[in-house]
Amino acid sequence: MSVQLHRYTHEIINALSVRKVFSAVLVRRILNSWLSEAQQHKLTFDKGGKDIMLFEG
Picture 1 (cartoon, rainbow, N blue to C red):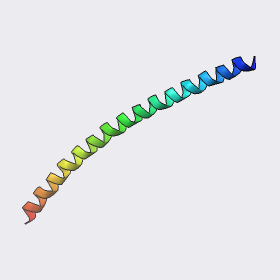
Picture 2 (picture 1 turned 90 degrees about the horizontal axis):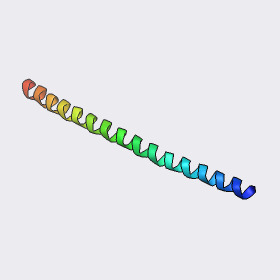
Picture 3 (picture 1 turned 120 degrees about the vertical axis):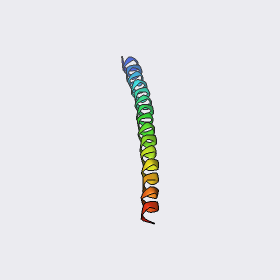
Picture 4 (picture 1 turned 180 degrees about the vertical axis):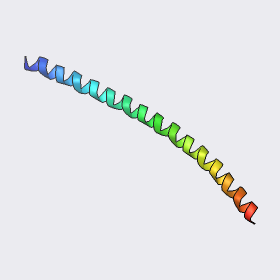
């Protein structure tokens, strides 16, 4: 019975680790898309800032 319990806990740990990896990949994807979006906004904002500087100069 203890062997069966050990095997069961091992399967649970494996499932949890797989879920952890999956969620980590998911979070990384969401973060990457959010970061690229923020970079695009930053680039357009930088362009706008340069335009404002040119107008002021």
